[in-house]
Image (cartoon, rainbow, N blue to C red):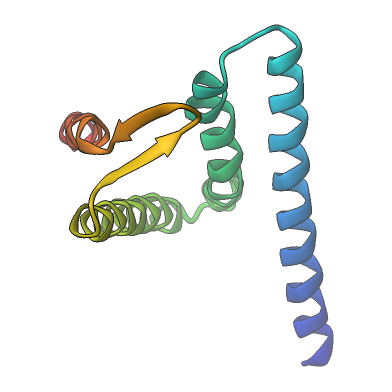
Length: 122
């Protein structure tokens, strides 16, 4: 029993470390090619945060447990949608505008883009 807990803690620690290194390395590589930080954030960082879910889905599909792969995708997407919409709603109630660098930035365009992507995904 305790060995299973050790494996879980060790696996989660390595997962977090690996995802962090993947994102940091890819961001540094993209920055060396003068890729804009917004593009880095939209592509590389989003892949780094989704890589663990991809690994679980591929492993479960290879093991013949396709329903686990589908449940992982549906669960993670539902969670991400609800967390994102909840965060944006709470931020909008608090004013909804933040400053990034020297520009004022509204999340209204993010909400529209996200709703369109969710609509295309379903």
